[in-house]
Length: 224
Image (cartoon, rainbow, N blue to C red; front, side, top):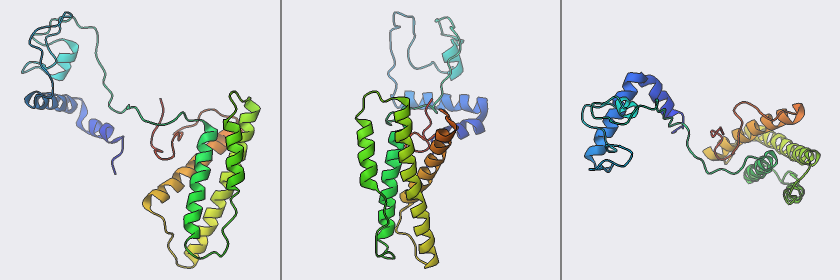
């Protein structure tokens, strides 16, 4: 599976000299494929073009130490490919817990379809959704109101997690395999980790925690 940290690991293995050579190769190939437009005339700022001349490394182009560089050096340029924009919503804790509870309801429904239970376990999903919608409609809720809403969603999610673990244990005892896909197992892990983080912050009154999950579908995303 492709991970966002892959480029970081490759850069560490190549080292400083290897990363410089890789940049040179990419620039040469981009020039041959005409992926970079070359300016024939220098711009008003004195730039000689977007493509460095032959024999000039990427570091020399950035720092302005090449033979044809006429722009004075204004300091090194650091490029980090590990920081990229992600299309995720604003990570409010109550909304994340409500989404996790909804995902847990879906996982419980899939386990119930296995045919081992005659009656579906109670999840209070309607009541939990009604309470969250009433909270989300408030424009500027007080801190105490936010804490109460977060606590309620935590308790609903804790109940669903206990129900899922009991159902999985019963299926394992009967020698049956849950009808879950790989994505469902990943969501279960993300929900459990999200609950652990949010419960710890709720009980201790924290506002920050290491490796904080801000999106259940993309649990590897970390905000900066």
